[in-house]
Length: 310
Image 1 (cartoon, helix red, strand yellow):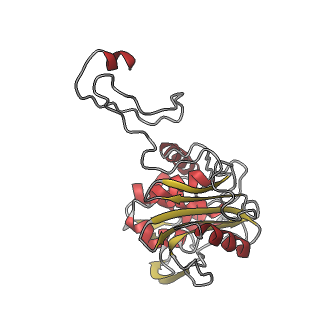
Image 2 (cartoon, rainbow, N blue to C red):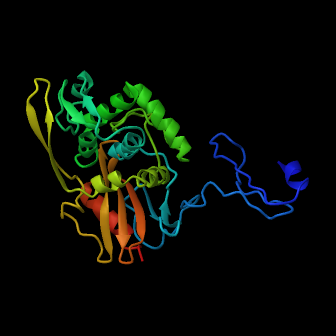
Image 3 (tube, rainbow, N blue to C red):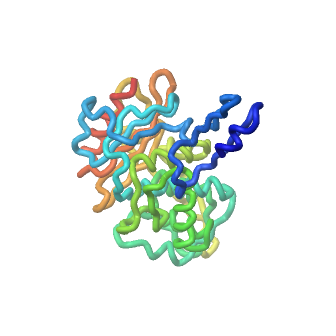
């Protein structure tokens, strides 16, 4: 690389692809003759290698939290954003991203026996083996109601099995720069080898936001549709959001409009939430709070974070 830079003049373009295993830590290379510079991998991303703004608000009741200005690519707040934690159903953001990237919304998915094998007590849409739903319907169940069986449907539709889908999840996560993440399932039910970080969730959520359908679904408070069961009968599905900002259970600070997001709760993960919000100028922010003891604390801590939005 150095020889090529020094042996010729003129305008040069140097593309250095992101590689999670590379020992190169700087992705800008200056040309001796032209001062041409390769675009850094994170030039359009917020970055946070250390804690930021801890004195600006109280997030003491959350294990980890972050506020990211996606308009100006700045990190406003960061508390332990690279700490590995159980993500619970925030996992489903990655599942939705892959569904939108590789699937077709109108495709029909036939539920396998796997939808009946979700652990007892877990949130489910109620799909049964043989039910036929579209990918669009499954995504609504996944993101609005946080149905774990919807995650199974999508995983088997895209990859044939949960294990193969987990392999795809991890490959795609690393392509996004989410290198402190490891997924073993499409829904986030607890497994000691299933973990991520606030910063990696920001990267994944940012990627999902490129799809208008994703933003549309996470902004939806109630959804009703019909599908066909194994016997050919028409069944109605109705999902109400788990996001209390959309259900009017919690009010955001006066200068902030919550567009939508994803909730997550398990015993291991505690209560978690990721949001997309706008300020009064229409600028966008991603905020993440992970591992609080209950939902009241979760939304109180999130509001403390949202108050930092100018």
